[in-house]
Image 1 (spheres, helix red, strand yellow):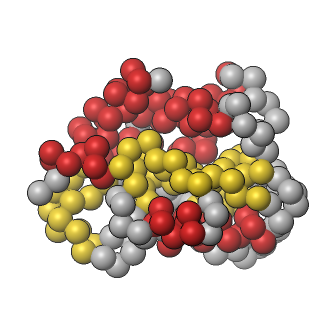
Image 2 (cartoon, rainbow, N blue to C red):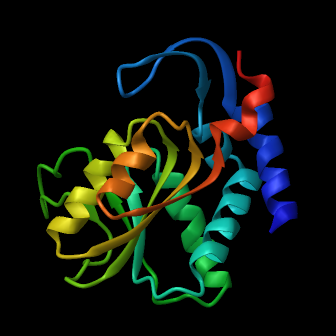
Image 3 (tube, rainbow, N blue to C red):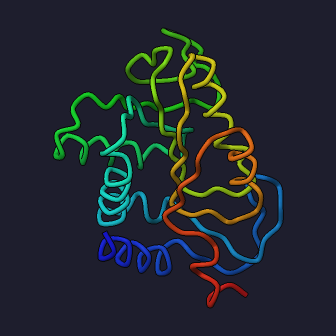
Length: 185
């Protein structure tokens, strides 16, 4: 897994890390930005992240994996393909909408039906304050599921992990801001 993580690190540094003036989804201002989609929508990046996620969950009893659109969408798609290749055919994959669908099923959560007691992993590209990932966590919990872990590509270490852990949810980030310390202004 170290080779995969090293290759993914290179992609994050080259493609996702930007220096400048940014307003984050949390409303905070920052002089650097991780555009996770530049990695999760890249063929190699999507594959590597999905393989790493599968390695992290394959020996646990996980019934479902998903997250909030749009950060989680490419991650979930890549995990679906790698899960199939790894023989994890029963893993339910889902996407949480930012607002319920206004027609048809009017669902918040798209994908196979989540059932009470399902053990769920929520994925995210970047965790900052945790607000975005908490929207997905709360909607999944409303279904009676047990959110056992959040897996993120990058944790900016700005309180999100602490918030999630305070709710009893494990957080496993592939990288933290500390991994990029030498390039952060």
